[in-house]
Structures are given as C-alpha cells and as structure tokens.
Image (cartoon, rainbow, N blue to C red):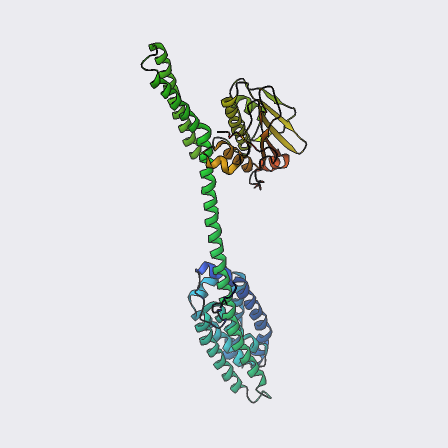
Length: 445
C-alpha cells in the first residue's frame, strides 16, 4: 500500500521455548523416523565399542558387569529400533528410562575409554533427550553425560595422549542436545500447521456437503412438491370462485381434484423424506436411459432413441430424467403441441434434447436473472448438468410453424459415464453454460 510500511511480526527462534507437545500418538508419529535412526546408529556404535570394553575389563565380576551392560544396551536399542510403536510411549512417559540407559552406557564408556566408538555413542543420549523431552530434558541429560565423560577422561588420563578427543565428544553432546530440541520444535510446529490445515479442509468439506445437500433439496422440492402445491392452489382458487354459480356436480369434481392434488403433495413429501433417509438403488447401477425416460415422462411425449445407447448409471439417469421433465413441464405451459425428446450419441458424448414449438425465450435471460426472479427451473437444470459432468445449452430451436421454439440440450461425455459406473471414482464436473447466441429469453419456471 502506497505510503504505508508493513512491519512483520516477530519470528519464532529455534532456541525459543518448547513448542507445546501434541497428543502422545501424534508425538510418536512425528518422532518415529528420527528416533529410530538415532537408535540404529547407537546400536552400531555399541556393537563396535563393546569389544574394547570387554578387552579392558578385569576378570570376574567386572567382566560380567560389562558384558551385561553391553547386552542390555544393545537389546534396548534394538527393541526401540524394531518396536518403536510399542516401547516409544514408555520412554515418552518415563524420562528415567533414558537416564537408566545413560548409566548403562557410562559403564561401557568408563571401561572402553572416551577414545573408543563408545565415546561417540555418548552423543546419542543428548540427541534423544532433545527429541523426546525438549530443553529441560536435554539440559539435564546432557549435563549428566558431560559428567560421565569427565569421569571417564580422568580415569583414562594416563592412557590418553591429549584431551582433544574427550573435548570433541563433549562438543558433540552439547550440539546433539541443541539439534534434538530444534528438530523437535520444528516437527511439532509443522504438525500443528498440518493439523490446522486438515481441520480447515474438513470444515470446508462439511460446508460444501451441506451446500450441495441444500441445493439438491431445493431442486427436489421444485421438481415435485412445489409444482403439486401450485396446481393445488390453482384448483382451490377455481373451486372458490365457482362456489356461488356452478352446478353441484362441477363443484364436486373440483373438490375431488383438490383432494387428489393434496394426496399427490403428501406422496411427494413421503418420497422426499424416504430419499433423505436412504437411497433405494445403488447410484452406480447401470439402467436403460430410454426406458427410464419413457416411464418417467408424462404419457404422449414422443421419444426418439438412436440405438445402440450406452448404459447409464442410475444417479445420472435420474438427473437426466429430472432435466427432461422440467423442460417438458415448461413446454406444456406455453404451447399445446407436445415437445419432442431425442436421445443420440455424438461419438464422444450422450446427448439428450427436448425441443418445443412455443414462442421462444425473452432476450437477456441468464442463470442469475432467473434465480433473482424466482424461476429456479433453469437453475436446477444447470446444477443437475454440472453434478453429472455434463454441459447444458438452452437456446432457440429454430423457426417453426408456431414460433421459434426452445431447445434444451445436455451433452454428457462418455468418459464421464464410464467413470461414474466405477464405484469410488470421483468426477470433476465442468461448469454449465448457456448458449452465447440468442440467449434464452422465456424463463422456464
């Protein structure tokens, strides 16, 4: 922004306080690879240094003590390397176990001298303390390890030509402790960020699922219950207007029509509730789309089906049936001639076309304008087309005897149908679109 200087906030240092530890299970997963590698290195160093300790140990009880320490340290490292998931929680909960391991290593180090491979194995304890327990644990165990090194150096002062090797090992111990804590904090920060991202993605997924379900309910209500209730209201209005001057037989017939419409509304409501509780058919089961349209559309609607047609998953067939039924319903409101329905394949897509001979559509109609004016039929058709990976076009059908007519056409790629028939396969649905030439003008209800 011009004229303004932004000052970034303080960046957390690697030497800052310990990052709050997540749950023990998350800690085990985060530290698993590094701790196993450290125990693997320690296992190799003990195997290399144990002969030095046994060679220098006196006969009798001292040799047995050194042998016991070597076997115990070797087996402990092997157990942690092989079964971290089993023994890792114990070490996390009880830091004294790592302290006991330090004493076992001290017996070997005092016997083998700081110049042996066991001197470098001493750096593994501060590294593990930093990874597992943070600054406090690393400080305590690193200090104890330095004391053991000092005692071992004094015990071997006459045999060592200089203290450089001991000083080098001591430096390794301090650096290993700091490195362990730094890696621990970095992993926990990364784990916290990953957890936050997963939670955000989960919330977005839930919000998307809720929005998709709301859109589905809106489409189902519009395609069934709303239309039935609208017809019921019209019939009831006609009944009320004719109460004073129509014969009783006519009034009785209209009352029967109102009762029938009310029963249809109740049946539609039950169907919607049943659909909310469970789906009757597997959405990937293949069905005959032509037969589905013949049985689902009102009687008297011509259907031209080019053979052979590919099998269509049940869920896709239901969406296509709803789109065709909406187009047929709109045609009946504006023309007496029955619309024509056609099913063809274009080589790469399955095409469903509904053509009427009505007055056409007013200019300037868009999805947004249809939604703003309360005509949700076109919006529902576009959403259904998108849900099955198809492309919707609503536009003029060409000049006819009674008017320009309207054509509703949806193309579903054959590749999308093949993927939909495979359970567990997700589809990326392209967005719906309207014809850019002579956009739809009469809003389908």
